[in-house]
Image (cartoon, rainbow, N blue to C red; front, side):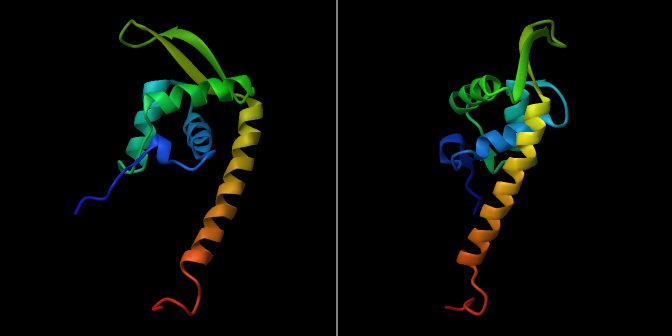
Length: 118
């Protein structure tokens, strides 16, 4: 049976910000490539829809965590390219820390020690 994927609206609040910031750590890229990177690196478990991605990118830009500029793509078309700012790098560290804490808490609650068979 195939593993179900998680669409953008199903992602926990704030998770998409972390995924975008982490993706941009590798370097500037356009929105479609960000969505594809998240999908590919999550082994198709996470799918970021356009209706979730671009509002998130605009929100991150408004916070100063990413910067955007129009550039000409390899195919000769204009594309909005996003890059991580120094403030975005600091926020990425904070977001990763929050995620690790949340993830640990979820593991503790869903897999309590000594209660595996109950």
